[in-house]
Image 1 (cartoon, one colour):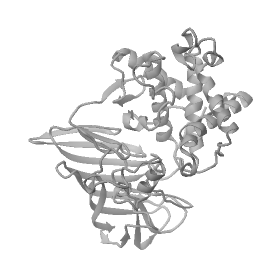
Image 2 (spheres, rainbow, N blue to C red):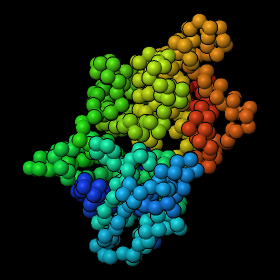
Image 3 (cartoon, helix red, strand yellow):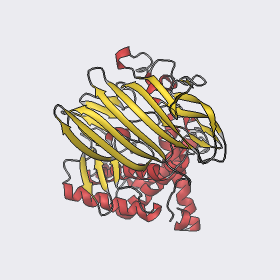
Length: 435
């Protein structure tokens, strides 16, 4: 067992004040970034990821990526549904500084040309005033919803420098690489909105508005839900608070909390103690990373017990959040490790707590079906079954292939299974010390 840790160095700090104009779907933001050069190099430029601008037009990398996935919604979107960022002012150490909003054709990356080089172990302060037009959530699940806003990658954040700049465009893969950062966010909203986030939340009513103060230490991102409905529930475990809108009303709150506590203790056995006070699990993110064969079945086909289905859904969501929030990793190049760890944990969890569950669930007991060999397969048998299928069909891709070069089938299913199986075979060979 080991604990994942960040690269040594001073954390960046982001302070942000935002006001929501829900008539125009615009966030008006004043942001301060204290950027520390933790590298051994002297920097002459700073790059900021501006993923909120990736919805601006059909030339953006995001629009073209969605086209590759046979989704034309953003490419042919109406202007009112698009999103963009408008920079009103930018200074470095309170001096006007030149910047380029389109870097090498990427409209979601900003290049700041420093007036003076930034030496190793020194810091600068970047102040930016800008507006963010929030896109419709139908494109990536993040943006304006029917009852509010579900926001991810909604503010400017420094790119990571490790020997070179790790520049990434928004390709709807939820894989932005960021440094550990300390956040102080103040957001002003009409009083009819509720706020949920992965930070600590403090509300101050002020007449027709509410001011929310959001605080977080050593965070890699800020997810923010602003909604007219209070959809999130908090579950207390022995270690952390779990806040989520992904719950099953059939399962009572005490049983839900017991299941979540068991999951957390199980994950900690392999990955060590979670370093934060809260785990924030949102349905929008989980829906993009489902358990295939479990979460896609229509409601009238229910081969698995409600507890089993919710347990595994939450385990997958929690393990992903756990890994993403504790391991600084370039998931676009090394996706196989995070996906493999997640699959490895799920296989071990099912083996320990649900060894009797079959791949076909209760359908395996139906007369006329139970005589087939398929009905005898255990739930964990799906992993080698799918991997062997891809190998026989010659559609397998190497694990060191960049995630943006994988087919959807390999990126979403087969690659994850292959990596998890590899870790499990390795664990069987050298013992549990693999993790």
